[in-house]
Amino acid sequence: MRGKHYDLPPPPSLSWEIKTYKVSGRTTLLLRRPGRIGDPGRCKDKLNSLAISVMNMWPGTKLRVTEGWDEDGHHSEDSLHYEGRAVDITTSDRDRNKYAMLARLAVEAGFDWVYYESKAHIHCSVKSEHSVAAKTGGCFPGDAQVSLEGGATKQMRDLRPGDRVLASSTTDGRGPLLYSPVLSFLDRQLNATKAFYVIGTAAGRSVALTAAHLIFVADGNCTGELSERDDGEETAEGSSSASKGERGPGWGGVAALRTVFASEVRPGQCLLTSRGAAGSEATLSAVTHVEVRRSMGLYAPLTQHGSIVVDGVLSSCYAAIDQHHLAHWVLAPLRFFYSLMGPSEPQSDGLHWYPQLLQRLGRMLLDPGHFHPWGFEEGHR
Image (cartoon, rainbow, N blue to C red; front, side, top):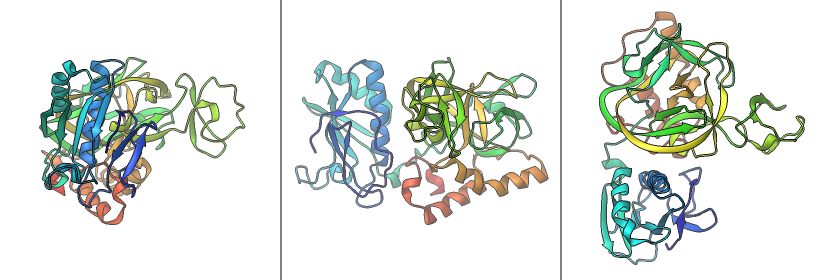
């Protein structure tokens, strides 16, 4: 494969049958369906992280992928280019003075092997999905802040079942905020250090989540209020002159409110931010930047309502699977159990047994494209 610039956003699904796709109509990156010869999921996520780092380091400069999947036999027999686990990269301006820093950024993005293969490019590769113990699940870091009933705040590492935290009153995230009880933790790892996507907004709020965690987003005009279309789907209503009776994804210049993985959020999209009081409604705020940093602690609290306001941003309690409503539905028995029995002490460390069981069932029953490639801890595969 020969290409030019690796532009964001990436394709929406890793389960495509085709082996090629074009990014912004210019770059061709060759991939295959996960589970065949090789699984490019980790490589794609590393490229996403690296592309963000390159844009932050050198504004106006993009990550350039010169070689991805090789189906022409240009490499040695054991090359990872045949498995979708290796890429050759440069910067879009091909400034070799930047290559040393580019290599460092590639290491920080999580590539398992980075080296100068030639003066013309840097070679990066990743281990196979089955050999990696870096699965992140979906969590918040230990220093994340939540808002408690009564106006106090508490760090995520100090949160306990029974605490009442700010959340949305509706599953779709557009209802008034209320204080929802924390029932348990879907995942809790006190000493783990992982990479988190730090998403900043124009409102000054920023939230850190692992790549596979779900968060509420809308596209388009972030200056309006949330409203509901005639067909029942949520939209972010902006200042467009379109009539309220108009339908379709272009109504009001925006698309419907939905949940996406944290690794898929891009600048220009809208997040729901909180004014910090029950009874108020979350407001839209534009994403200004996305960064990747490492922090200690992995915490995934489960609230009665399936959402939680963390650092002033409304997020889902769920991860790994791409549908918030489905996750909320399959976890209903667990929420019902804790509602009857009352909150219990959280597990000392690791994934709760119930979502662990659901992950195993889900991988048997659902298409792999519904899951984030980093959605499962290696120990629970």
